[in-house]
Length: 124
Image (tube, rainbow, N blue to C red; front, side, top):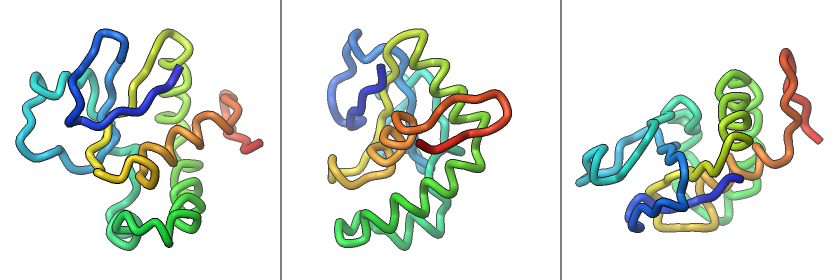
């Protein structure tokens, strides 16, 4: 199971394995305070895409398309996340104040719509 949660929300036991999926560490948080098990910054959108998007909901659909293209080249990280989510609950931690239009939401959608194969990721 894959869940989403803002870093500013209280960590709970039900979160399972907590993975920060942001390229930049959230200000004001230590690893212990944020209760992060793993910081997977390489799964986050590239700096250029992140800056272009700027959390503008009008750019959401195009952002998702570009991010999906980036994710297709991160097979090892995608397969790691899929494997981890089969072992138990994984919570993707993000810092955006927009809970509907952020890279963690796009990543979760990508993970839920891809097939895990050894050598290739196929999009349904």
